[in-house]
Length: 292
Image 1 (cartoon, rainbow, N blue to C red):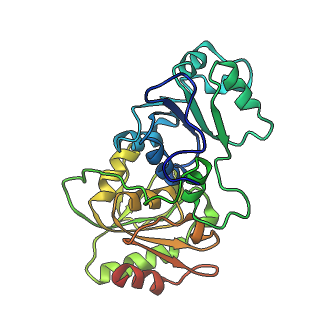
Image 2: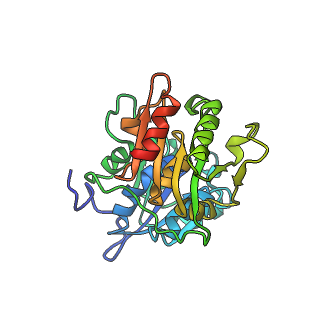
């Protein structure tokens, strides 16, 4: 496929820079992996985003999009019944839409067509079973683009430099390195004079940390990104926050067990991926962080 243009031009409303609505409703990591394709599309179209605004704000801040729309406020769910006037009015503003949602029977695509937007390209939000390349390449492939550079956020770090941030959670317990290994890693780092902070959020509810643990807990992903950008090192699971740390350019150690790092790991020369069956040992992760 060409790296210069998608398979067909965007929209059919005449000359000029087309306006494309990108709908993404997946997790933080999935969205960040999709960002290289949005970044590439933004070279030839004016982009607006629809989904969970807290996540999409990352792309807005990176200059990939002109505006973010909250899918609930926009009445997106009404497309699965009778499209509301709100969603009709929004869709009518665009030349084309890219929808990252499974639409096996084409019902969603037909509903968007009924609102007057005829160029609709719908793709499953995750790579298909058997996909054996990096996930970011799946999103690029769908839009007809070649492999692109990893997505990077330009984020102003918080004023106070941070040393090591550990994030022990993820979107699924099966992807989490055992907590006791994170605790042992933190002790080993402190014994070497490193200052450890723990990143916690909704995914870490019920996680018991030491009473003297220093916590990073920010109200938004944009605020969290500023903390991550100020850190010397980050350690975490196969998670959205790990992808966020890597996108900020922070030296990142990503711990992988059951998921396929070839597909799902963050990318970059500053990223170290530590794999194990079922999990890597503490010494392996410590060595990657200190010497990788």
